[in-house]
Length: 295
Image (cartoon, rainbow, N blue to C red; front, top):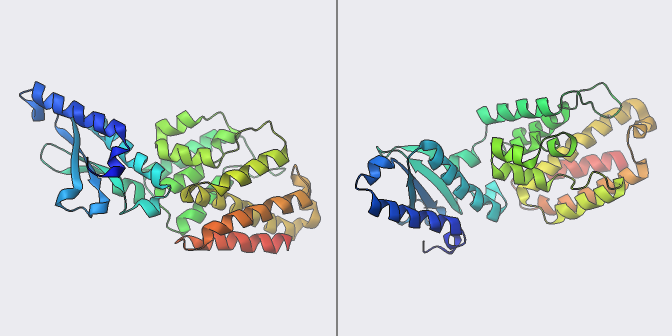
């Protein structure tokens, strides 16, 4: 545990100490605990010295839970799947034959859809059942699906796409952050928390001001989820404005001028994420759509 990054994760050190105690206690140690969790230090490029055994576990489920926690702790520190990949720590699980059976790097950087994405679609659809877009007969689920599509078209990792699918569930349904963490992991739950309004009872202006202030310090991945959400919304407004003209603003709880203030404030904050990002097109397009609608 020489790496400073690892020293910050105290629970990992406790796992290592427990593992040493188990090895001394059980003569059949490796047979009793066949699944090995390894912490790979990607700063060292997956070389011989880049791996440390954390602990061994009796079941695959326990081992994956430990390796997932290692990976998610590293992600929460870095704030971005993109910046973390190849630059931090991740958990791996090997079985008794030495075969790699779970890989934190792959799990958290994989794109192109997965069974978990489909689970998130079902989860969000069930959560938003019976809800509609403001003053329309359009099922609400089309909005998180639209936001997720924006991210998938940018080839964003699945975890970010999943957070996008779930981004309104805590705000607008009975779903809790704990529900999301249990189903999709702590990292997804933390992303949803960063893009959710904390106080639904506050005034419209108060809630939107809170959103803007939160985005100023949000992680890069949370900013992506927020931008996809707002981009899908502003696209919808622009389409409807073409059909309804000024009447479109009657759908909202705030006036056109208030909406103008909000979207321009969002554009200003999100423009800070635009420069140097591999996902710059999403931020650029959002700013362009705001200009198209509000001038």
